Length: 253
Image (cartoon, rainbow, N blue to C red; front, side):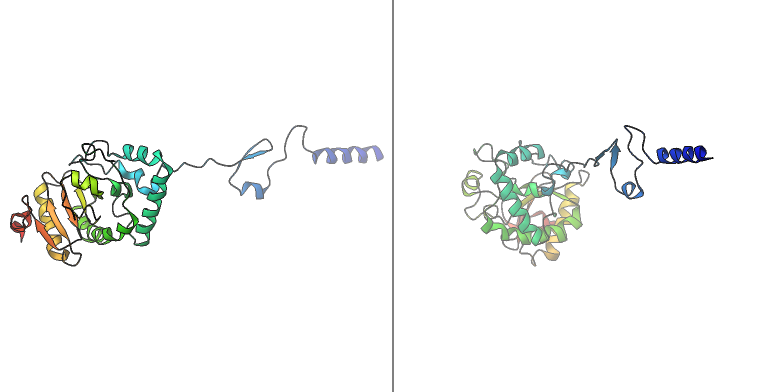
């Protein structure tokens, strides 16, 4: 009888000890954590890397590029190369984005497009991208509000083709000394929707300008194709010769 009791005790003891080289089964507490166990080593799940410069709208920018007047070397890929060229570019972009975010305007158009310069940047020996000086940032606020509240509801999302131009680039581009682009009031934009016809675009934007343009001090001009200019430096409109009488909006007044 004593021998039988000892045998049972040994079986119970060994059943409570893990086999050599094996780990005990994970507890319920361990299973509740999102880890993958490999023997006795816990491996955290891999994180998905964020798209480069996603905070500047670059992750979605490829869907918003349009050939209507876009100059060479001002694509999303070109922007990324420019931004990586020096840390000061990224720092300046971050500060600019922070300013617009505080105004609730950092997603009206992709941020990276707001630093496109002139379509003639290459001929003028300038840069394809440039962050406007901080003292001019306030001037684009009303323009972006008009784009957000009136242009986009009329024609859908738009792509910015040209924004700030420094003094030298503005002069080389035949801009007026007090050009709205030089003072960072202005954007040249085009609808993202490639199926939107020019005539429909003009009618819709002109109606928005007539309705709310005076509220935002909007200047509105049209180029060839589907590219148009919008600023907030004075309520006005103009046509090919720079005069209001030749504005396409006259036909829809």
